[in-house]
Each structure stands twice: as structure tokens, then as C-alpha cells.
Amino acid sequence: TATGSLLSVIICVIAFLILTRKEKHIAELKEECFKNAKELSKEREKISKILAEKVSLEMSGLSLAENGFNIKIHQKDLFDVDGIDVVDFVVRLNKGFDFASLKDAASGGEGSRIMLALKVVLQNADPSQLLIFDEIDTGISGNVAFKAGLKLYQVSMDTQVICITHLAQVACFFDKTYYIEKSVVNDTTVTSAKELDNRESIKQLGMLLSGNENSKASLDAAEELYSEANKEKNKLSKA
View (cartoon, rainbow, N blue to C red):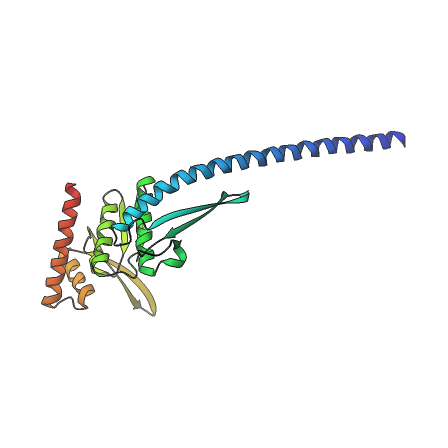
């Protein structure tokens, strides 16, 4: 009927108007999102320079090249949940080399130290009550490991730090030490944690250094390492 046809036309017109309004609203939202994404990109550019400088400074204290960290930001044509930026951390770990992507350029030990430097900087910017470092000292040893241990202790002055390590040069900065051990009880593997006193902790340092916790040489070395760590801790406390 004519009335039915008119009603159908009216419904179609209303549906068209609603759809047009929604499409316009979506377009406006997209424009606003793109505008916000560009503003976010500008802020990222500013902050990236500050972050790169601070991470580079921390890296140099961990026996890595000076000014060895940078952040590259490329803009995409379309935005997504992360904005319009593609962010890449790049590093230059040896003089005379160009910057390369962190994931391609860093060895295990270098990656561990860079991660520690990032943790230190980001902790200062956004403090946490607890940080857990699980073998962040992978691939390092000797004086470099000692510097990493000192850096971990420095972080612990502002927040609680739990560090799982197999290196005496890191463990010597302990305030409290727990010995983690696995054993089999009734055909089931059980993990236990025992808090060590100062004497037991030094014995474990000797074990980590030489594999023998009871020899005089290993205990002497452990006590010397522990003494050196305490000297560095006292310097930080007085600074």
C-alpha cells in the first residue's frame, strides 16, 4: 500500500541519517585520536632524549661505552593502540661502530647490564616498592660484575631488591642472604630457602668464588671481597 511504502521510505531515511551521523562521529573521533597521537609523539620525542642520556650515563658506570644508548622513533601513517610511533632502542657498544638495534647488537652480558641501567632509570622515574632481578648478571664476571652488584645495592637504597645470582661479586653486597636448594623427598622435588647468617654467607661467597667453601684461600678471598663491598656501601651511605 501507499502508506506502507511511505513508512518504508521514512524508515530508510531515518536509518540513513543515523548512519551518516554515526559515520561523521566516527570520522571526528578518528581525527581527534590522530591529533592526540601526534601530540603523544611530540612528547615521546622530548622524553626519549632525556631517557637516552640517563640510560647512557648508567651504562657508562657498568663498563659500557659512553653515549651508547639512543632511541629512534619513526611515525606510521595510521595510528593504533600505541599511537603513530614505532620505537626502537638502539645501542653503540664499541667505538667506531654505528648504532644498531638493541636486540641485534647486544650480547647476553651487555643485554643484562643495559637492562639493569634501564631498571635504575625507570625506577627513579616511577618508584616501585619491590624489584626482582633474576640472574640479571648473566654473561658478566670480575670487576664488571662487582660494578653491577654495587648498582643493584644503590637501587636497594630506595626500594627493596631481591636478586637471584650465582656471582660472588654481586652476592657480596647482601643485606640478607638466602640459600636456595632443591632436594628430592619421596620422589618429589622440593625447593627450600634458608636464611644465612654473616658467617654462612661468607662461606657461600667462598663457594661461588672457588667451589670450596672450607678452604682457607677461598674464605680469605670471600672475606676480602665482602670487605671491599662494605667499603663501597659505606661510601654510598655517606654520599
